[in-house]
Image (cartoon, rainbow, N blue to C red; front, top):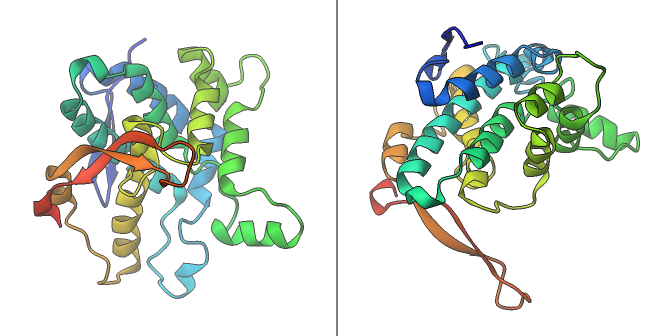
Length: 243
């Protein structure tokens, strides 16, 4: 069953469309199903900036809105990535893993977001929101339960575990991973703009469209000469005009 085109109007990105172009329709169908799971809908009640609204009354935006924005930016980065990569290096499966990881990256946040982790640590609980996220994505469910895991594994067996593993990885393993976790990832590119807009602060502006237009792929080394092995991976880099 195809997905009827769905549109969400966002104060930062404008229209976020699901089910548009034919080549992404199947992926958008899965993303829309994920948005409607109880795990994702819970994020409508989790403030992005915890208790910051006591100082910035407009900062009532939620982790749900942020997650939508991250998914939207991740699709933009994916478009740039696929134009920069040679055709034989493009990988639709890795694209799926990265985009679903971008959408689900904050599903493990508790009440008051990062402040909740501090309370847990004081009570002897060492889990951070990344670990909670991973466990929520892969936990077993009953038959017919419309959970994150059942949706992802329904698209491809083992996909839920791959998404969870990407979100727990220490550093980007490839250019697709860089969309979710790097110095120029979809998460940062959403919250830098969203938090600034919703708090009303004037500092911290970035020229988003100019940066994207001057984005490229480059190879970097992870590690030092003292390490036994230095790994080279492709990731996003900025052209000189973006500096």
